Length: 510
Picture (cartoon, rainbow, N blue to C red):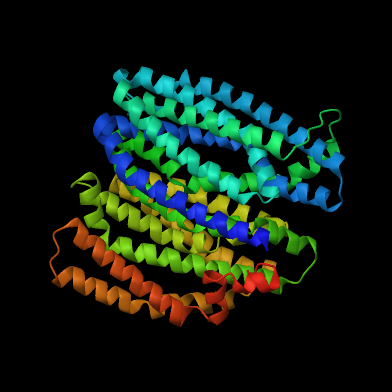
């Protein structure tokens, strides 16, 4: 009961973090844009997107930690856990060294990497930012083992609280340093300082509080081979995620159209990133539960139950957010960063629409990993995303930054909408028809929300921020009321809004 209460508290903290992140995007982003200018802000976004590819040096190792930790824990093998931790730490330290070396190579070859996107005036700034952000990326590798250990111990409240704390201090540091330095290097420094604090907290907590053991006496090559075989396709998935994310788009747009266009795309991409964070907190806390179901050999009905219930809740939240943005998005941009960002609005809509299926079913990725059937997804997505990059280049030339969003959307819909649903059904045994029968209720029953909101916006004049907020609140209330009474059944309403069932049974009903 205590564990389930902690899970619910972790979800609450996660959504507090999400609200804070939204506030940071809403208030800090326009501040940085005004202070740095469109070109220099776009320069930072292009460089940070490029440096993010150094995360591939992690080779998917962190995603495999919980699987092997759970095995040793179920065997009560403390020596095995210590040896596992030591192996992972050594591997991550080597990755950190490689990350810094590659970062230096990029910094000393700025012109070759970024082409004409960076002029002589910004050359030094770009050089410094690449080095700082590479060091920041290098810290993420050893930190990941502490984060994974915290997850494996199901200390979700601590984990989510740290994320919330870092999300508070990072924008504060960015504002202070930008006011002092007046250039994009300040943002990079603030990010690195926040990362150092994040690393320190996670390190101390796991070593002192959780007594995380490390053994460097022997290196189990057979275990490393098994880990490598398991993580190869997870690594491939990470490659695919980066190829289909806004990072590759920012790089291509910067080289083809310039850093001003990167800012236009980024302003749309930030909304899709906020959209992504809406669903993530729910599925993340069920990762250990999924592995327990698989390890215990229970049938696929339990996996279908988790997939459908979590996916249905996620879809309801995502669809509401998407509907709201379509209706009030243009007004939002004018209030947020001013006029002249209509392209960003259409970019945001395109990216959000392509993400709905993927994000509502993202718990399926963890199910694939748990049953060790994530390979096919990796191969198919690799082909789709390579095609996405090839298609996006002429689309960017012809359509500008909107072309990049169209290319990404095509890849996402082909991969998540068609292939993955077929794969879930036939390869994993998920009752995908049952999932969509439940999910489509959300679209059908909430049509009146669209109609009423559209009528109000089109035919009733509102000229104040308070009035727009009132419109949105009425829309959210109406949507929630319809979903509560007509979309979710009695058991699902109890699962979402009440602890009564968990208190009686002492377990999570998801």
